[in-house]
Image (cartoon, one colour):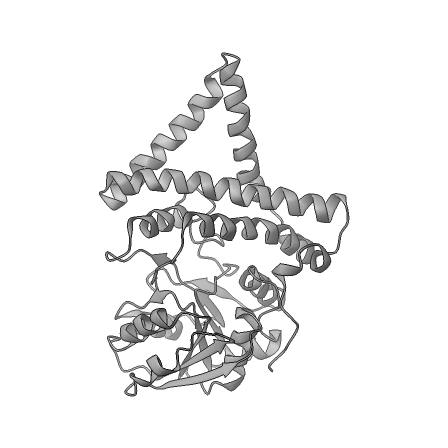
Length: 340
């Protein structure tokens, strides 16, 4: 696509049993500023709690609604992109809210520095619960596997599908998202890079990511992230990094520190106490809340132990036992359907 060509954005939003979230997201659309052409495509992914009636209340927005059988978020995004009229797609999760200048920021950056794919960070809104804010800190902190989750703002930046843009041209070239979930977004990013497409991080194009989640759901989420990473390493060997071992080593080291403490060897546990104290201070500084800072430290340990356990379990299955990912972890894969 030529940078001088008019950009028309199509927002692609899969939803599964979350009509309340769609209502809040569409309300944030009504507050968008600027005169940038866009349309909204909401894909109901086999929900039993339909969003259709909620969407009808937003008849002033250029919104299109599709209801289909359940086939996962990746396939639902492909379904939406194959039907959308725009030439540049913006992928959002249903549990985000848009700042009023979001679209203006994206349009301005792409006109100045066009790439066929971009990603933006997530932030916590003032109205979020303490747990949501704590988990957001954990998922975005430089002290964890968070940050922007993909590295620096380079041409090989790996966007995540809660806030991600991809051109029509790049969608057609790749066929869109694969059937794995989670992990469909880094897989697509890596395939884009292999085909020579450039990506970028647009730091100012953040979204408020609600993460409607409990402690148990958060653990299951990061556990699945850990399961998926060795699969992505298998599919994309050049993407493998030693840093992916950090949560596993962190978890094993902490357990070792407790054993050593019983044996009156305390230095290792002191390192973990220092780390936790640093995380507490950083979370306190950003949130101005002691309770959120405490929850943030707890969330870091949940993140590391969940991800670390999933990572080592998947690594042993794939590298040691040589098992097939789809057969060993069938719940991580949806049926194969392509919409191109």
